[in-house]
Image (cartoon, rainbow over all chains, first blue to last red; front, side, top):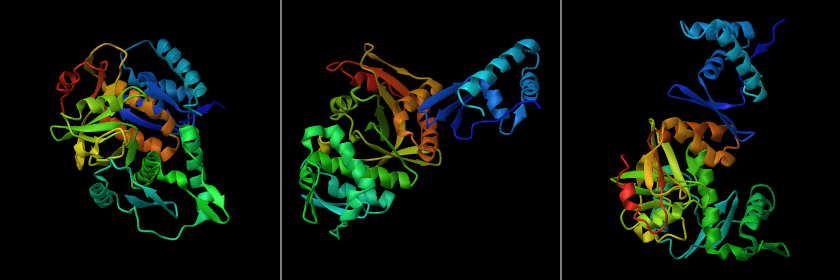
Length: 88
Length: 258
């Protein structure tokens, strides 16, 4: 079964214009999400697997970067967000 | 002037510093806005509450931050002796703690900042500890009425942020202060290291800086979430100001759009 991801609900967050600021108040850390990370965060309000995440992000970049490049970006971002405990 | 401060269930006799001229008027003003009175008539003192929990924490904080200036209360038979409460700094210290508790319980927010009034709008002065918030306020206080120093009480209503006057700093002449509730028009971040000038910050940069300056205070979910909501509004009009003491900072303040 494919691994599923979801937002870490212990974080507080606020949208500022098109950006997203996350606050990990327990660790005293502030995270500022770029566009791809913000799309992933928005999408992970419920558990989703990596394929669902790739498909969603690709659908948001119609006519933009190549699919393979987006997939690589998303994969990197998922690893990073998991490491930073933004996702569980 | 002697007051009685109510801390948890305990009422303690304290002397009010002589330079807090506004304290009587301000007390009425504060209680109208935030409810529960915290300066009260003498009541029974419950020593048990003082000795554990909330108060013990407070005393430890004082001990570490004020070092040898403070004598911790001593036990005399069953009576607790509070000689050190006559210290004016401690009056302000405890009053600040009470204000923070009262304001936060009612959905407000306390910021470590100063504030003055320009064109009937409040301008907050923020910055790291030692960055010169009070120094800047003192340079400006004969041109713009100060309304708070060190501790700023904020209230969010219908997407706007308001500041309540808090005349609680011993370094400031409170005769110059204006009592009232003022909508925040701008925030100034003091940076003494980089020359002389003023620049408006982008909203996201301002939000990160506001969070960064206060991250140690955002230690629970309620305050963290609330702070983000307040900072989101405040970050719309934030300026970074650089100057050294002695330079005419008024010319920079005039450039702030409210």
